[in-house]
Length: 116
Image (cartoon, rainbow, N blue to C red; front, side, top):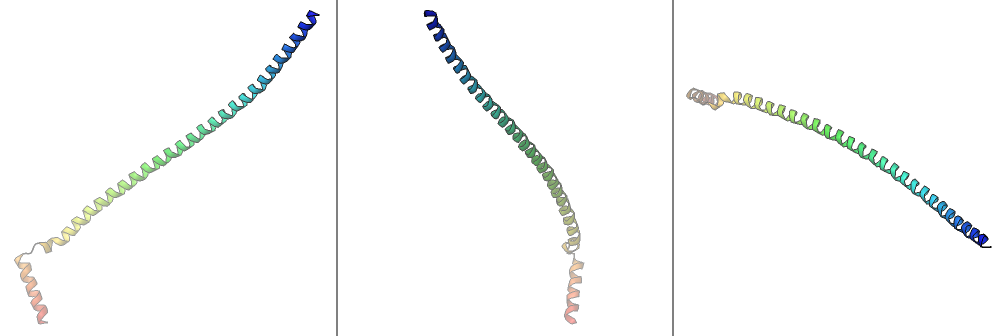
């Protein structure tokens, strides 16, 4: 009779343990599923970060190329300005040097214009 009681207690404890093991297995499977989801999310985020980083790197490279082109163009325009200033100075030179001959020629020309 004592053995029968002990056997029933052992069976009850075994059933309770088995139920607890089954519950823990379900919970473990759920947690493993969550871990897998999070790992996929992390992988996706890392991919996005790399894509954004690559795109930013390409934009930065293009910016540097564009800036270099603009600086070169600006330098070229500065050189053109210098050349044009030299040409302008050469055109103005005869008029900037008011020699007495130039003044008398101008006076004669204006007298002739008045007489006509």
